Amino acid sequence: MATYNSTVGDTALAYTDSHKAYVVKESVNIQTEATALATAGYFAAGDIIQVFDIPANTWVVAAGLIPTTAEGTTLTYDLGDGTTADGFVDGLDGNATTAAHAQIAEGYGAGTQLGKVYTSTDTLDLKLVTMGAQVSHAAVVTVWMVCFDLN
Image (spheres, rainbow, N blue to C red):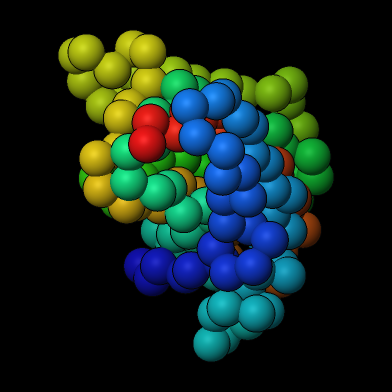
């Protein structure tokens, strides 16, 4: 299992006006990311792609995934952060294009049903939980989150 940082450039949080709600989203092409980040040119089960930087004092109300292109073989996604890999989405089928899959922060435990407040920096992470053995990927998934800047 490896972790790959894909938060450079336009995938970082672009909204900086304080005390307002905002939505960030990024289409993640698994093969494009693998070619750019993974030494082997493909990902393996358990690999993590860091999609968004989460600044300190940010309230993430909800986050989710919209699979737009199926993998063509076994692929399961989790969406979380550096603390809990499946805090927002747990076990979404990446070999199907389902309707938008959204979650509040249920995976983080009691008191987080309205999201999670980040008092220090973190990342929103897309984990490739299970994956068929292949050397190329077809999957594309949109990752999104709804946030408030608390500064």
